[in-house]
Image (cartoon, rainbow, N blue to C red; front, side, top):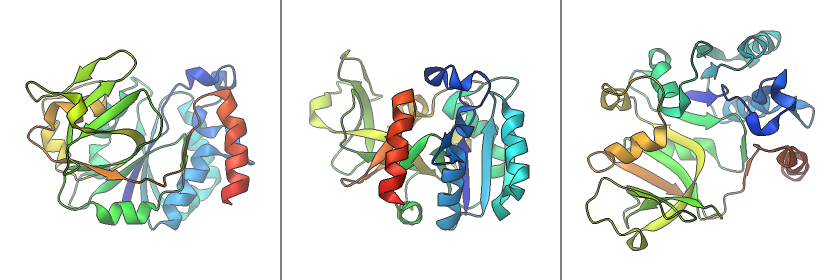
Length: 243
């Protein structure tokens, strides 16, 4: 089972902590947040990982080597020349992810209670399966009654995105995206004309009229996005509660 971990982010909201350290290596409970994700993936049966790097990327390489790659087969998708965003990052890692089996994508700065193996096994007939929940968020992905992606809405600004004409957001179920999804390798054929830096959400929205982008709603999802300094404190408490 393969998985891609996004660890290339600049961590701008966590400055000055990230001035000299990549966000993925900031410690939580005595371990870098990247290590918590790696160990969860390993416990869930994932044995081949791809980790993308950019900001202070050599530190991540050195850390993985010091841990003997946690006994896993780990590839580095090097974006140190140019940060490619989530969609571009997935496409850049194609050489490691292409093949016959789906792969899971997980942000390095996310803690959750989701059963990753169960999510992976749920994915079957869609091009991508997105872990979502009805948690509070200004930005929601919009799905129809069959849990198929149809659009996106920023509820604060009123901005709406959808390939469907005469799209009415209120007719769809809104969910917040978790930063965790499972993707079939056929995705790379859809990405042929997409180049450079691009968002995977914008990509999903561009193709969802023709491709099945499916929701995996989890009502009891507990999720923590470690994007701000105060979230580091919450993460310490999280680990105490969920250890």
